[in-house]
Image (tube, rainbow, N blue to C red):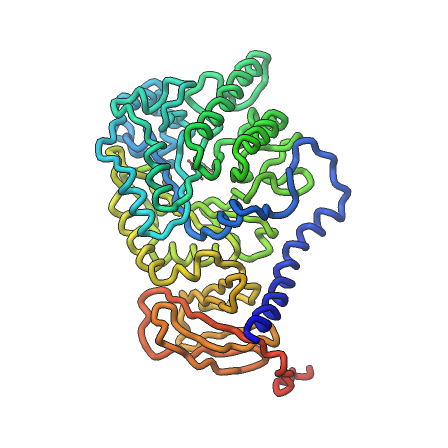
Amino acid sequence: MIKKAILVIAIAWNCVNAAHVNAQQTATTTQKPIALQHGAHRIGRRTDADMEKWRAYGLGQFIHWGLYSIPAGEWNGKQYSGAAEWLKSWKEVSATAYDSLMYQFNPTKFNAESWAETAKQMGVKYVTITTKHHDGFCLWPSKYTNFTVANSPYKKDIIGPLVKAYDKRGIDVILYFSIMDWHNPDWRYDIKTREDSIAFDRFKQFTRNQLLELLTLYPTAKGLWFDGTWDKSWVKQAAFADSLEKEMRAMRPGLIIGSRFRADEYGKRHFDSNGNMMGDYEQGWERKIPEKIADVHGNDWDCVMTVPENQWGYSKVWKGHIKTTDELLEMLAKCVSLDGNFVLNFGPKPDGTLRTEELDLAKGIGEWMGINSEAIYNGEYAGLVKQDWGYYVKKTGTNKIYMLVFNVPVSGALNVVLPSRTAISKVYDLGNPGQNYAPEEIGTSAYFIHLKQQTFKRPFVIVLETADNSKNSGAQYQKAKT
Ligand code: FHN
């Protein structure tokens, strides 16, 4: 009986979910598609086990680490106004002086196990680590350039121990790689001359070599997170990038690549000229979160977020608003409620330790996740009308809906509107499973959950167990004739 009820509810919700996916497909199919050689490889979501796992992560960690952590946003006593990892692009900084920071890179306190343990305690399921940012410095001993950790006083590989430590704790690793490389003399912002073209051809081979090298050295990494792909030079490489993507996927079946890697032959990025996403998930949600499910067009996506407004690498000074644990948890809840993952950035210090503010946030998030992660892992868009108290999340194959509550109304009554013919069979607080609530029915499949009188200091999760209510005609609730 319970199974039947779950099936009825699941069918109703799947109809709601299918509607938003179909909306995008209808939009793209009403116009005659352009024949593309280097457009999307697939329409619709990937359904294999690797991608199902990615989709279920909920919470991730981003790590930006490199030479830029040494000056930490300061050069000759002056504070750079941009993001610390962009310091080399500042006119005050000479390229040679910046590159010689390599001879100072010696993170003697770096301990991959302790970073991975912090991430584990925080509850993250995947980590994206910068192997090479725009400055071109490689955190692995690449044999294709001298500008690597191997030639720093530290000498040792950073990526290998991190992959091992995170793998050991069941946290999947994604390798961040910037295509744009300010150190490589063959890099160009655009290709205007024959010389540019020859140089950029060399650069493409270098890029291919480094990517295949990474996939060979770190065979357990689950994906590649591309960045620095917006310049005209790279946008013009549709055929090369497409063939490289295919080569990497053939080398590593299941590899996950986002929508930032390549452009189609018309220079369209993320979405090809027919509006289909190129890659396995949308990578455009940087420091912003979609407002509603229609904004994600049925695609997989993740949101990458900084703690201050825009600092990824370690910066001595964090200006402006610094996000709190509860704000970050609300972002996490919102992302999961809209079918996305939330990825929080960490910018380690030059000695290899994590900054105190980030450790405190990781601890706070971890404490909350310790109680409420059931509402995050495998969480999905619930197909319900959003209410002011927070976010709904559902889990496929169960009869549970999670209410992630961030704003308690003065009345203490949380409004819940379920699909018609759905009743609530049980309501309880995830942090206190003994604490049951009796829902008050206020309309057809509409309820108030009356919270007990108390002060709520932290966001919390209420679980609704649902049941089939198809026998109830709802006739007692009449709509007004107007
Ligand atoms: O320019 C970079 C920036 O430094 C940072 O790495 C972020 C992370 O998503 N990506 C680029 C900007 O989109």
